[in-house]
Amino acid sequence: MWRLVPPKLGRLSRSLKLAALGSLLVLMVLHSPSLLASWQRNELTDRRFLQLNKCPACFGTSWCRRFLNGQVVFEAWGRLRLLDFLNVKNVYFAQYGEPRESGRRRVVLKRLGSQRELAQLDQSICKRATGRPRCDLLQAMPRTEFARLNGDVRLLTPEAVEGWSDLVHCPSQRLLDRLVRRYAETKDSGSFLLRNLKDSERMQLLLTLAFNPEPLVLQIFPSDEGWPFAKYLGACGRMVAVNYVGEELWSYFNAPWEKRVDLAWQLMEIAEQLTNNDFEFALYLLDVSFDNFAVGPRDGKVIIVDAENVLVADKRLIRQSRVGRRQICH
Image (tube, rainbow, N blue to C red; front, side, top):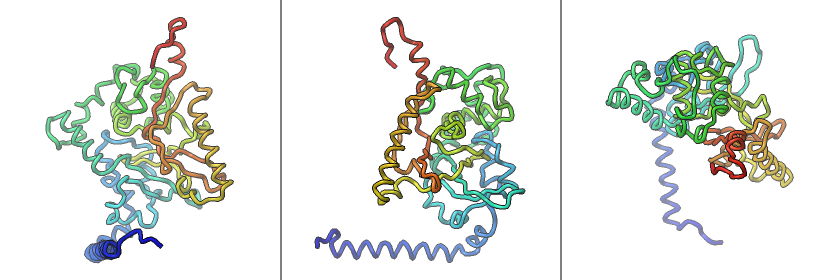
């Protein structure tokens, strides 16, 4: 049998693993009081942990009552802040329950970016508003482009946000009207008029659109209408909640052949649905990986669980832009 790792390298690898494990144990011992405290308290009720203090430089407030009332709690190891350095994507698993319900359901919590990306966001806002890397975000936000569209602006137009993210790489007015009308982080949802949003809500909407439009994709194309995306639940500060779908697609690598055929067929059906649908929007996934799909444990349905990099093209606009028989390139 061939040796894939030379003996010396194998011993070195084992030594490094043991050293890393020993370092982790030492850290756990040194931080045992704070470790125990973080295990016992529900940090999802802490406004600063949710970064609610950074609003309107945040993603919304629709779920704040549920978070602050203790209806959302971390699962197991998610309570240990010591392990956050391993959680690069800032994705957590939690349990949520309504007061009148006996059981709880599993949800996924996302900060929509790494700690580094969120820090860069803060610095970018401060530099644009004050020229300095640090500032009071509450005072800085009204001095950025996220506040440029004030209450006098009637509609969110393509010229204002084109190129901010993949979602609006080539936006149409119909897409943006749909975005504003279905924005779930406002009490006035249902209106496509941008001026009907509060100043803070407009800034939150535009910030999310520029930083990570995943929550907006889930709102514009909701699972309740049959779109193959995870269901958006709400946000509080810089913590977004979506429903838990199931195990990621890579966990089915060794599933029976019939199961893998079924999953592959579903993926092709998703591609067809996103390209050709009654709404005449074509959705293109720009980041296709096994981590971005999950499979429901009961119905075996494949669902997209990461919608950050989705480009949307308005097929109706493309059709209307034809000049005679000449097709305009988009």
